[in-house]
Image (cartoon, rainbow, N blue to C red):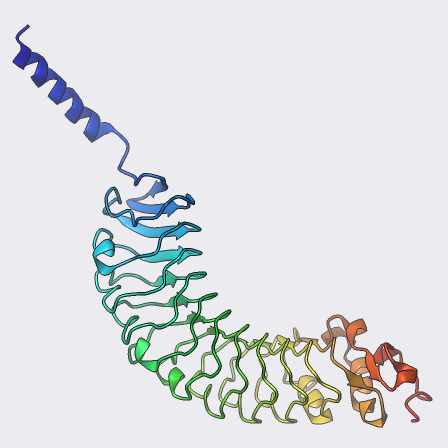
Length: 338
């Protein structure tokens, strides 16, 4: 047989193999194909370059996790115009380009957890209709209102585990659709009055693990849809009596691990108001409660609302010495001098 005939047969065989073979998938990645969509996961420790070549054109979800990736650019993402979810977490990315998301207009979820991000450029999140943005566990020390477009679609924003010391008072004017906001484990010392007012749809707020010493009485006045409020692990020494007024949908309140010695009877009455959620659970433990005559209101409320209290045995006296480590609920009328 002539050599050119052999070559022709080989070429045809290869072409047939290409058309009938498995779709492309980048080296050191795993691809999941379903109903015309492709999910790509790259998690090899030695992985260090964005997989521009080999990415299926119909990739809708891309996850690069726990690798040595340090750079991601708009040019890289041009290979995935249909991308809806992008997860680049626990890598070494330290900077993002201004135009990063210009080529992925369908992107609704961006997770950049566990990188080395510090300063982000203006309008960085304005080129896609993001609904979920996770910037957890980075090195971010300040939030810029210019990051976001006017009337942002964000419903979930996670800035936990960064180095934030303050939140701009006008930040949330652009984020009115937020339902879940996580600012935990930063270095926040206060939340300015009015900061949360635009967040009428907010349902979950996590301020735990900061350095809050006090809260303005009006902090939550414009967040009537709140169901979960996390204030644990701060330095709160008192809570304003009307702090929770209007939060009738509250299901969970965490104020454990603070510096509370007393708590307002008015605030407790709000928590037992008939208009409050019947699912309400309150966590008050691991505070230095002072079991003097002022603890009577807490004592009575605990006895009358045991079903609302989670880990009631953790609510213990820190003083006086004669009652130290006693459960507040276990105190007697005589011990309280009633």
